[in-house]
Every structure is written in C-alpha cells, then in structure tokens.
Amino acid sequence: MQTLTGGSLILAATPIGSSTDASQALRDAIASADIIAAEDTRRFVTLTKRLGIEPVGRIVSYFEGNESARTGELVEAVAGGARVVLCTDAGMPSVSDPGYRVVVACVERGLRVTAVPGPSAVLTALAVSGLPVDRFCFEGFLPRKSGERRRRLGKLAAEERTMVFFEAPHRLAAFLTDAAAELGDERPAAVCRELTKPYEEVRRGGLAELAGWAAEGVRGEVTIVVAGAEDIEVSTDEAVRLVFRAMDGGAKLSAAVAEVAKATGANRKELYAAALAAREGK
Image (cartoon, rainbow, N blue to C red; front, side):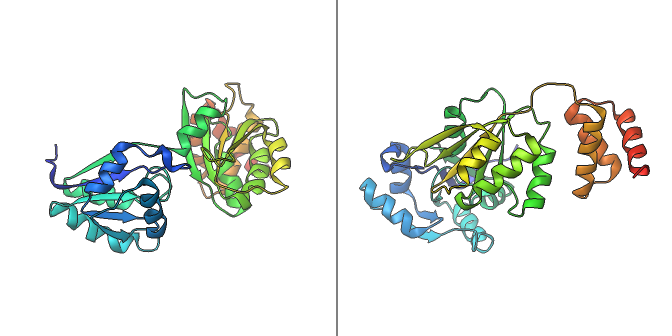
C-alpha cells in the first residue's frame, strides 16, 4: 500500500447549470486552495464572482492544449505540500474533461488525490431518462466520423446495460441516425439538453424518432441515454454479422469471435466455424 504524502490534488465538481447548485464544500475548496487549475480561467473567475468568493490561490489554466505540459508542474506542487484544486467548466474533472493525466501522475507518486463531489451530467441524465438505472456504462464522446462511430455503436449492439453518451449539439442528429442504424430504430432513448438550466429539456422516444426531431437543429449541452439490448437470443446469422463488423474495425477473426461470443452468449467454437464458412463463401 502506498503512503499518502505531501499536499493534495482535489478534483472539484462545478455546477453544470445554475451556480446555486454549488456546494459549501466547493466554496471551501476554492477559498483554501494554494493553486487552482481551471479548464477555462475566465469561466472560473465568472463562477467565483457569482459565488461571492475571492480565491487567494494562484489560478492557472489546465485544458486539453496544455494538459500534458502542465501536469508535471501541478504534481510537483502537490508533492511540495500545496493544495491544488482542479476545476473544469462543468461537472466532475477527468470525466470527458481534463484531469485524468494529473490523477494518474499523482497516484504514481503516492500523493493524495481526493474529490469534492457534486453535479454530474452522466448521473443526472441517467436519473431523469426513465430508462433502467440498476446497471449502466458511460461511453463519453464517440468518434466524429460516421464510419468510425457506427463501428463503435455496432460493438455496443448487444450491450445489456443502459448506455450514456456525450455529443456536440451540431452532431446530435448524425449520432442518433447512426445509433438507429446500428441499435435499431425503436431502441428506447432519451436526449437530455441543458440539464439543470432554465431551458432544460428531456426528449424520450425511439432512436429513429429522436433523430427526426434532432434534424431540425438542437442547441446547448447534450447528454444521450440509450437503453441496453434486451436479453434475447441472437441468431447465428446476426452473430456472424457482428463478427464481420468487428473485423471491419480492425479485429482479427479469432478476437472478433471471442468478443461477440462474450457479448451474445453464443458458442465460441460454433460461431468461429460459422464465421469462417461465411467468410470463405464471400
């Protein structure tokens, strides 16, 4: 077991909507920080003004463009005994936002890493979606290109857990169209827009229906929740189709068969033989 030494890296969740959602713990963490690493320093200063806080610590930027270069500096500050608070624009740092690199670096050095819990678009969307919440997985942002996105979605076709995705508003319609093609037009889903903000909207329906709605244009921050696959038996032909799709994504036949067999419950040897026969018959 590693011994926690030095200062602390504090991952501080910030409001995803109204600043009134800020906890006292967040206020205290900001007020007592030696260094505050903010994804967008201007947005962070605006937040502190709304909260009536005047940070005494040094504020530095920490975003995708300088994350690699600045991580070492922050780790050394923690090692030297500093309280370093990391804040992203909204929600929990490191969840599809900067933070993962510095967390790993601190853990490797045996430094203390903790968090100020708070708002999360993932859990908020899941809770209001009306879809099963007992088991879920977070997939974040999928590839921007349709072909790559469809391959990723195809691999999730047999996923039985509820799935949560992030997507940019201008790509939402394309995402939903690809999801309908790979997961089924009627697969239940919910598009959660502007969560906890004045214009919050949750649209529920089948993927194809939602794609039609999104084609008119959508604004604001978007989180998508999609129901998992029903626990039904997958035909051999469908399982073979999933194997070929995995192979299109670069997987070798044996690896693709193992992946699909695990996801669908198909017999691995029988599926391999069927896929091999189908490939030779092409």
